[in-house]
Length: 448
Image (cartoon, rainbow, N blue to C red; front, side, top):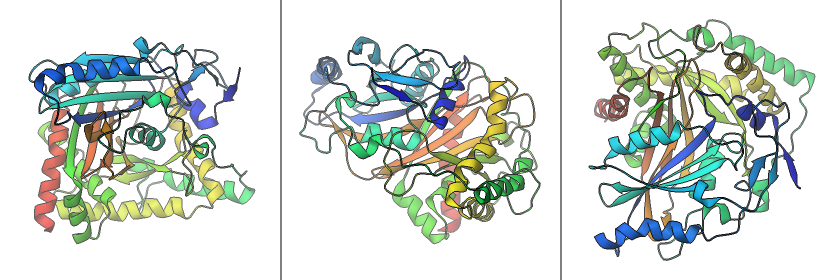
C-alpha cells in the first residue's frame, strides 16, 4: 500500500471540513453539441459518453487517492491508492427542467455543490447535465480542496479534454499526469530573517492604514455572518477582448478591472437593500506562491487584502481607488524574501482559520467581506467527443463570516465568473451576476 502524507496546506483543507462548510472546489463547464448531432442524437450523446467512460478501468493520481482514515479529525492525514472505482457513484447524469437557462443551471449546481463529499470514497465527482438551452450541455467536476487548489484543479480538468474535435475523449481519471505534476518544488526552511520579515508584514495587516487594506479596514455588512448548509450559485461572462481594451486604456490590469466589476456589483446590490457601509468593502485575494515552471498538484496559495471601492460612486474613480490599494498590497507581499512567503501566509490566515475550527468565525467583525480569486486560464480550444468547450466557471467554497465568493477564470474569448453564496445570507445572488455586467459597461462607457 503506497501511502502519501498530505502537506500542511492540503491537510488544513481536510481539517476545516464541516457540516455547513464542505471543503471542495469545482469547475462548471458548458459545451456546444457537435454540429453533426441531430436532436435525436443529442438525447443519446451524454448517455453513450457516460457508458463508454464507465468502461475505463485505468485510474491515475489524484483521482485514485482515498483517505486512510475517513475523518477530518486527524493531525497528519494520509491517502492511499485505489484501482477499483465505483463509477456509478463518481459519474452521474442529470437533466435540467425547462427552459434550461442559466437560472435553472445555477439552481441545480447549487444543490449539487452543497452536498458534502463522502470521505470514504476518492474525493471527486463528475456530473453531466443535459437539457441546457441553446444546443448545450454541462459538466460539473468537484474535487476536494485537500487534493487541489484552484489553479491546479482547473488545469487538471481543462487539460484533460481533447485538443481537437475529432478525438474521442479520455475520461479525466484515466489521464496519466507528467512526472513534474507529481512533484512539488522542494521547500526551503525560512531563516530567522525570513520569519522577522513575515512577522513585520503581518503586523502591518493588523493596524489601521490609509494606504494599505488591512484587517482593520473591513466594515460590517448584512452579508457577513454564520453559514447555513445551503448554497446559491450564479455565473456570468464578459468578452476578454473588451476587458483587455478597457484595461489598456485605463492603465490597469485584468485583475483590477475584475475587482472594479465586483465592487460596482456589490455597491448596487447593497444600495438596493439600503445597507451600503460608508467604508469600502474588502476582499481576500488569493495569490499563487508557485515558482515558475511548477505544475504540481496541491495547494500553494497565499492571500493579500484589497479594497473594492464600494464607497466610490464614480466607476473611473473606483478603479483608481482599487489600483492604489492593490499596488500597496502587492508591494507588501512582493517585498518579502521568497522563503518568508509561507510563514507570512500561515500568520495571515491562521487566526481566521483557527476561529473557523473553533466555531467562532462569523460571530464577530469579519476579517474581510468577500473573496475574489482570479485563476489563470487558457485560450486554446478544448473538446469533449467533438463538443466544443464554451465556458469554464469556477465554483469555489465559502466560510463562516465570509459567505460570498467570486472566482473568475479565462477560457477562449471570455473571462468567466462563478459566484457562490450562502443561501440564507445572500438572497437573489443572480442580481450580483447581472451587476457584474452593469458595472463593467458603466466603466467601459466612462473610460472609452
